[in-house]
Amino acid sequence: MEVLYFAWVRERIGVPREHVITQAATVADLVAELRAREDRYDLAFSDLSSLRVAVDQELADFDAPLAGVREVAFFPPMTGG
Image (cartoon, rainbow, N blue to C red; front, side, top):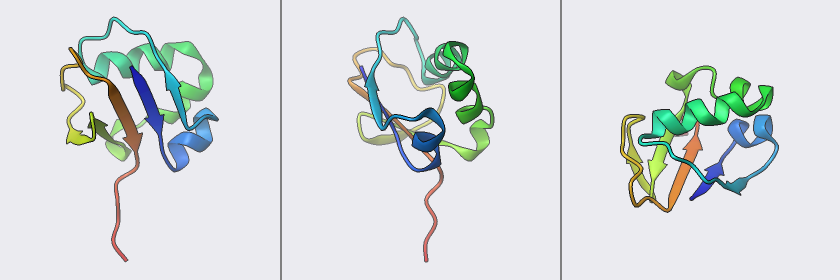
């Protein structure tokens, strides 16, 4: 699946997107796999309350299932202004 990173998530990880082969059942499982990779991922995902996730371009929760999903995106909460 494609994993996309936006804003400060992208800055901490160092890439805007990557192809990930995963056995994760949920977004939370995917985050756990990513955090175990390297310190930069661990730092980016250290506070999930400051992150939002979209699954196939639809806002989702971290317990959302990944079966059949093609794209997961992580980004900070959007603010108006």
